[in-house]
Image (tube, rainbow, N blue to C red):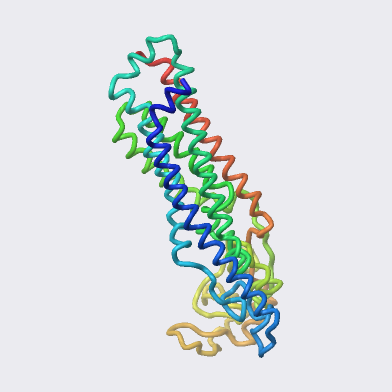
Length: 353
């Protein structure tokens, strides 16, 4: 069976290796250039003392100061963005046709009447193709993660969704679930084109669902509270470096979120209905902010609201949880893939040839 699988898919594997070589060439060349630029920038900033914002304290990682100079390459970044398509392509080109094409051409009727059992036939085909997909996605992810190293060091934003999804373990999880989804769709539908459509739509739906509802909610967020007059980010801007913000707003004494048109110095906005009766006398006293309908609350109003129990809250996932989130989400995708493959195996074993 090993030789048969190799013979059947040698063209696809050759194409995959050629594409991987092309990606590696671009990312390695561009990555070395970017690493050199980052090293040179660090040296220049360390030896520079010309005015505020010219040293390491001048806003590194946030677009300002000496270290805020961009080192990212357009070409390398384009390849990073394109790498998000790798799992979907694997599921469409390898997963969906894996069984569906065999059923369409009728080769299963021949294969299942020979000495090889259905289970061994399926294990060999699925096993080798899944292994190839994992290796291919893992290699691409390793290249993108290595290329992103200087950018991660400069911006500390690898926890941002656009970067988090293209590095580390997640691309492997995406490839596994995309392949399993394609295989299961092919087994259930018995047609390649419908299986491809279901695989693409299903993979996009899973990715969107996780990104919007689940991805950064797998662990309870760290929440801190500050007064209305304090800095919006407790501990200063350094607390959000490498972290991802889950929620940031204000709340009244009962813990209810507050929104509206009058802003307090920390950046929160409060509507007149939210303001307690004891503070109404200060509600009309605002300093115009230049935006129609907006204004900064007077010190008297802010003081009154603070005494009434109003405060800011800030929920975030710290950057130290990066690999924990990578492992949790990847594990969920592997579990989903196992369920899909179990369904495919069950259907194949009980289906008439």
